[in-house]
Length: 107
Image (tube, rainbow, N blue to C red):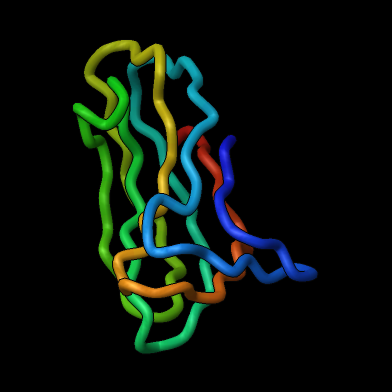
């Protein structure tokens, strides 16, 4: 996983661009749950997605303001060889982010 920004304790000072992406991994076809919990200021906005093909195929996506605690469905109709999770800071300035959890499990 690639992480951009400055880590201060358990807070990431994230630039206004891709904050993290990866790790690219193979996932067999099936139905999964993506759990994501991220804490940031209520006026900050970001986009979290799960993709493959270097972002050409988006399997799950959510844009959010402030804190996010969500389970997203991930349905793969075929095996995927380069699935990754990404977070984009679209606030337009540096923001503070706490990543509490990001996980994938079978449904």
